[in-house]
Length: 66
Image (cartoon, rainbow, N blue to C red; front, top):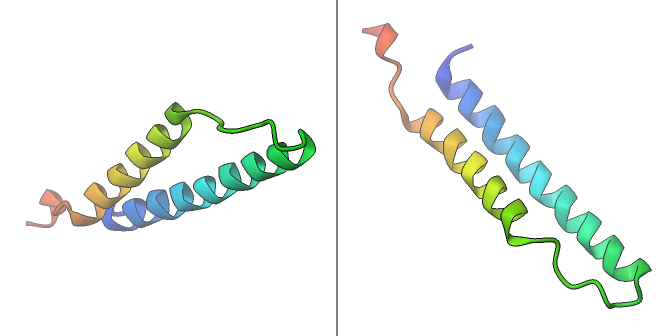
């Protein structure tokens, strides 16, 4: 697989992971009666780092093609 398709795959998976984390957060807030506020900044920071890694792989030129 070339870097561009791996980057697209990683970016899509990070967006999907973000949606799942938000759904879990909403479900936790619903089941706790509104007392659950936030899952943690580190989860969102990790998702952003993975997303940016995927974007970097999409943008980066493949040096082996030259």
